[in-house]
Image (cartoon, rainbow over all chains, first blue to last red; front, side):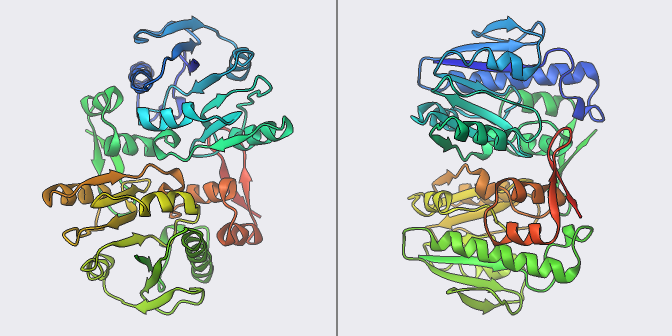
Amino acid sequence: MHVVVPFSADRPKTRLADELSAAERRDFSEAMLSDVLDALDGVDRALDVTVLATGPVDTAGDATVEIDDRPLTTAVNDRLDTAPTAVVMADLALATPEPLADLLDSEADLAIAAGLGGGTNAFLARDTAFRVDYHGASYRDHLEIAGEEDLSVREVDSRLLAVDIDEPADLAELLLHGEGAATDWLVDAGFELDVGGGRVEVVRY
Amino acid sequence: MHVVVPFSADRPKTRLADELSAAERRDFSEAMLSDVLDALDGVDRALDVTVLATGPVDTAGDATVEIDDRPLTTAVNDRLDTAPTAVVMADLALATPEPLADLLDSEADLAIAAGLGGGTNAFLARDTAFRVDYHGASYRDHLEIAGEEDLSVREVDSRLLAVDIDEPADLAELLLHGEGAATDWLVDAGFELDVGGGRVEVVRY
């Protein structure tokens, strides 16, 4: 089965610009990519993994790297002429093999996992009629596209796939639950949990 | 099986004070409680549901209401002398029967579902040795308590149970994915999704 992992190599994670320098965001993004690839590697299924990157990538492990600097939607849609194809975002640093296997084992035309804030964090399309549109609240748009094409849909309910690391609050999720390279990177960079009132936050020392 | 739903009847949802008046927060909290009770009602299992409230509750449906104005940790621990007992938070307005059934069907000594930000949104204790401590990042503390008591643990991975509605960003999750009374309440109160850049937010008209 084809699995595509889109990766923004040039200007990753701009919403973390207050917390991390450009070089740090780049390193941190590669650490997250490596966690996602490790999680895919732990799925007991033969997967043909391609990192679809906008530029060169240092840490792709056994995955093939293909450079495609077109917009995300265009680049991904070009891959959906082959089915089944799964697309898994590169910033799902909490992803583990279990929810990924749940997604990849689905027999529906479209299995899809929502991200926090309305995004689409992972999907498996078993029908080439499915197309992506990552602009705006893509999860709802993707359900709508599936509806228009009469595709059967399974919504995969997973916190570990829902948390994409985009914003400062997401760093707390990594420090709370993460066990991989991205969590190690954050700890090495001086981030710690701040267990005050309400939700836990991060501070950097 | 006993299911306890703790509900703050007096000063609910203070972190939404910029968005909602005190009276609105009270109404909205009752709508969320009613969604949680509906989801429990949809679980195909005989459940004995008690709303453990700090004061009177209007919308408890078929559930028993017991008034207990002690701190949450104390009030819940008093219930854990009986096993199995499940505790499900009253603000899980996205909860559906499926992930709740997944939790309630677990055979582990402790089945537990994390909330965003380090909280514990739902658990099922099948061993009376388990005790709660809701102060701070309770999820990690609860795993630690289970470890100290040599309890087997199953971590239930569910986005629908992870999203508790505490903060403005959580309202967007409700408008994106919700289908119950709390979502209707928000829409009637004039909240709409704002699909701009990045994650979707809410605006009120």
